[in-house]
Amino acid sequence: MTQGDAHPIDYDALVKPDAVHGACYIRPDIFAEELKRIYGRGWVFIGHQSEIPDAGDYVRKWIGLQPVLFARDKAGKYNVLFNRCMHRGASICQNERGNVGGFRCEYHGWFYRLDGALQAMPYPDAYGSDFDKTQYNLRKPARVDEYRGFVFASLSAKGIALTEHISGPARQQLDYACDLSPDGELIVRSGATKLAYNGNWKLQMENSIDGYHPNFTHQSYIGTFERTTGMKFDMFNGDSSVQSRDLGMGATNIDSRRYSLENPHARARLQSLQKSSWGKKYYDDLVKAHGKERAEEVLIINGTHMNVFPNLVVLAQQVRTIQPVSTERTEVYLRPSLLKGVPDEVNMHRLRAYESFYTTAGGGIHDDVEMFNRVHEGLRCNEDPWLIFRRGLHREQVDNDGTIFGQGTDETAQRAMWRHWKSVMQQELEG
Ligand code: FES
Ligand SMILES: [Fe+2]
Image 1: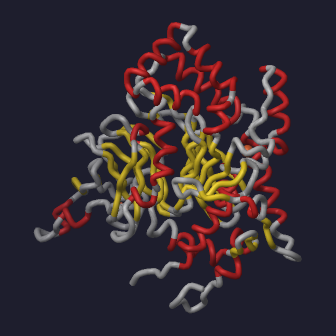
Image 2: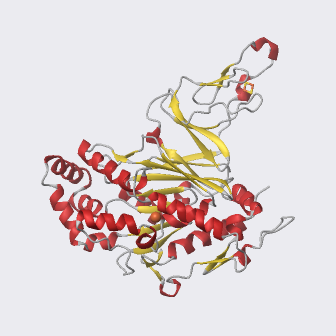
Image 3: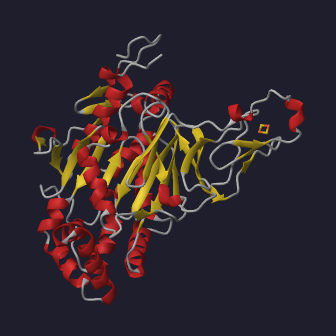
């Protein structure tokens, strides 16, 4: 139970070790509390700094329901600015992305620099000689930090550091994704594939690391894959080489390291990569950058498949952001990620792989969205309003690094997310 509230919500009664009450997805008061307790004080993913490579670049983003701008200033620094004019509150930028010299509010023309400083307003004399422009700079989140180009913000001046929020095992997963580049950097520069569904934001978080659903939800995609490649899609058949993992702090992972390292197909891919001149160059550059052992490890493991609580998913060739709108609506932005410093062919293959599943013309992502709509519809039935997350609970183990893991189709990752969700929702709000 949350202390000190007029109408406390009993989270212990709503989130059990093996089940979650439907209220957690549909009650507006719980959604309002999430905005305060999760998005209103914890670390929230804003964007990847490569989205705004040049001075003047900006992308519109959100922290919970609050609009912000992610903008590169003329000194080359990225800024997270509240998208709210300091005059009378209008949002100052409506375009999703672009390049500008500064932000001009359309209402009365106040003009802000890319770092948020108020530069000028029309007919300034009317404000008197004691008007201090520096008091009216665009406001910024209390804290902004990054890990390997992934930029996060927190609206609270106090709280854990970003490196505590993204635990060591979670950072290790992000490293697999970034170290596929000899420069160690992802490039996230394109537009986004945008999805919207009628339902709660946590449905997408649960699903992004759900190894139980692909063989059913994505049956048609998998069938096509198997027919066209002659390969068997056998990752999620319930054996223990793929693991559902709790990385700590609500971060989760479908961990296919063992599956890949032991899979003859993955090893064969390493050989065939070196048959083309561009593949050989990529392999050699990666060995030069990281050493042979690490280069081969990251090539075989081939990125990650993970969530960083509450709104970031790094999965295969994409960076996905989850944007809550209401209990009835969620938007999801999927952006393909490229690798810095590699031959064009490598990135072309990444893009084609991304497109095959995740774009509007792709074969898979729509299936998931349809399931979210169906869950939301089903949640209107309140006869027995529990969602069961029991799968594999009896066989969870603790690994050497302290992370908890189960088998690939187990719901270890979902339970981890809900445990963390509950602990954040039960924490005292300061002030
Ligand atoms: S509200 Fe922005 S200039 Fe008036
Ligand atoms: Fe899916």
